[in-house]
Length: 376
Image (tube, rainbow, N blue to C red):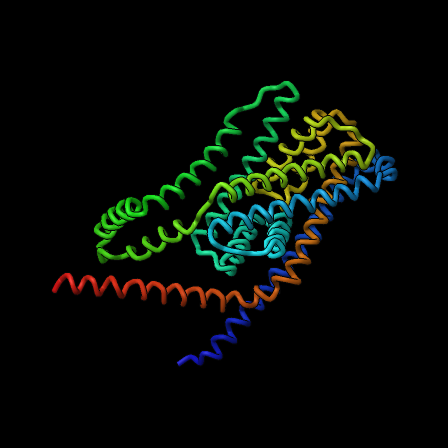
């Protein structure tokens, strides 16, 4: 028989080993990113050195402030969406998760996967159900995509070009579809349960499972969805802070240009920002290394009407703030606040599993009693 204390010790050892491995990988990845950024920009820095040596530190400080405002606004979006799901958290806790997850997304290979998993786990720690935690991630991502599409389309119209309406329609349809689906489930739970039970019964019949397999879980999921109450206030605040999140990031790019003496066109900033964020979302190098830099330099030169040397210097300042500085702050926040959580992950998973199994058994007892009564 295995001693429970030995099992816990072994689990703690495995968790500690995993954490040490991730720490080394993160450190090596961050160093590699810094070296890669320097190698890419070094041949062009001599052309931009004069602009960098004459940098306007007031605009550089504004660049840092607006980036902080952008991340704070995104944290508020997360807070409002969780509030709609019945989870109450402080802005500080939400912001700490945003910094930690952003650092992962920027610096780790497949960073978006680690970032999403980290955010999901922390929201579960705050008391969010699996459905609410997943819903928050989905709706915040769609809203962010909507904001980016609006900026890109606006920039294209201002410059006098044509814009693909699909780029704007798709995220709008996504937001509306998610909201309407949640509202319909809340208003017509029995209809959803009836359809779900019919589908489960067919599936169980094909797999020769017990007819009641999955029925309790279906009821639980519907009940979790019903707990989401995205009212007009939460929806308006989420959309408003999402707009602040994007506009503050655009302002950060603009201040980076002003800091080195450039005078970019506003519509060019919108196009450059949208293009760089779009290519940065493509899986590849962490933080869109090289790809984002090249896109920024090219679009700032062509769309924002600044010289190539100014574009290189502007991109360097912007990336130092939005990439390097944010990643450093994010990892510091992670190490200070969330490092202990990583050692507790095994125990947390066991507690969640035990709690959900207990709830499942509690829900099954009345069902069994009702069935036996009916048979009698």
